[in-house]
Length: 109
Length: 112
Image (tube, rainbow over all chains, first blue to last red; front, side, top):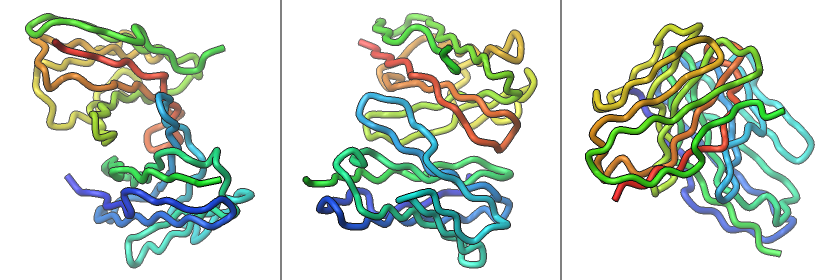
């Protein structure tokens, strides 16, 4: 099946800095792009999503951008806090359903 | 008021055994999923049912068989368990196909 590439695999930032995670997909039928946060030992939880008819969406410190032509989308977290530390997954859903391999974000106090 | 629940939470069993994991959602959603998350945390879709009908069936061994007795339940039965089946299995549901997914708490399966 089609893949979703996610980068970086690990990301370490200082508290207060911004963090950016990028994903690239290949299935042209993908039209829904959610981002999930998974804390250690917990279930993945949706933090933000975007549909293909929108280029950007923001929710407080979290934003997602989508470039459908280039087939990539990104998660932006501003003013990071230690509780943002987790594994983040992107996904591309449409005719197919694929998750990225995850990014382990560590926010140092 | 748990939205998506799974049982058991932990399952330790020996190679060759047959086991089942149950999933229930009380959200009234039409679509349910099973995912496998391995030790490297990679999350991979296994199956998806929409209104009790199988719509996604990824390349998984046929030792894995999903069963959906009704829209609110999607169980996973695994025959002849192997060491490589050890992982965390997550159930999820969404209102409709391709919608926001709600995950269950996961079942950690350990095959010895």
